[in-house]
Length: 177
Image 1 (spheres, rainbow, N blue to C red):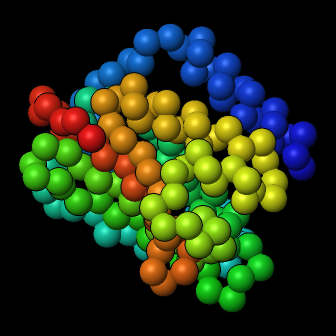
Image 2 (cartoon, rainbow, N blue to C red):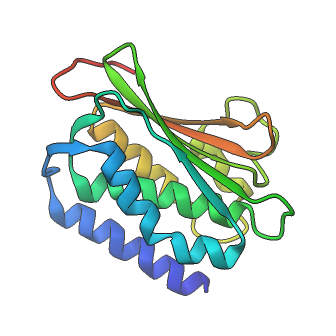
């Protein structure tokens, strides 16, 4: 299992490197979330994870590379599902909200094992808690988000688990996270 997962990460990394500069176009982040969640429906159902979403009705258009942002979303969703294995409560919430009309915040919230009880944990510090995987998916995700002039961080979910937040600038708006 670890070898297969490592192969997937290396292939994804190779694709991102081969792609070079991001191919940025106007993208609805809510639509991208819907598409990405649909890819995980079967996996979540098999793992007993209930998925819900709370997506803003406000402007959700960003200038982004669809493939790269989908990679970030998929990584966060996959990590959340894995973090809830063998736990009695398995709830995943994906939400969006505008931030001062300059950015949109995407949050992936789970009721899993959480970032080790560390308040405002840095996503890069979470590698030590991974039982499986190579632990580079979050650093790749962070690099992608930063290449899109955004910011990615994690914090403890007060209801148990973790909340990964990502701010991305709305189309044509200056944002400094």
